[in-house]
Image (cartoon, rainbow, N blue to C red):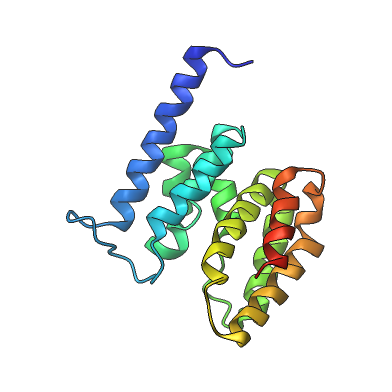
Length: 180
């Protein structure tokens, strides 16, 4: 069991990640300054806090909070590593898509390969990301978009997420997929 001092230290590091996320994604008025149409800060915080509530370690929580800053805010992996360490940088790098890959399917397959290679922590962050995104996608009207999402997520479950199939978070993602 963690000591109160260890928990406090972890929470201060999580707060540092939250401030970094906000500084990267919002202007002084609190408006999003990046091009993603979804509220990235809210999504990232929900993803991170979900994992914190589930009892995952601080590197996983911080990785979740920062999981979109490379691809949406252009923050380098080196900067993330410098501020938050190698473990967090490895998670963020694994879950971020490669913008140099033009084909959408190849891009998500490449991301899946990198997540799988990075291991359990990256898989957990990606599963939590998918769970929060499911709440967004269930309101999307386009059948084509839903079909594409379902195809991509089925691939993710089969090729990557199965590695944590005994964890409740995996089962929750499967249930969210059924309800898309």
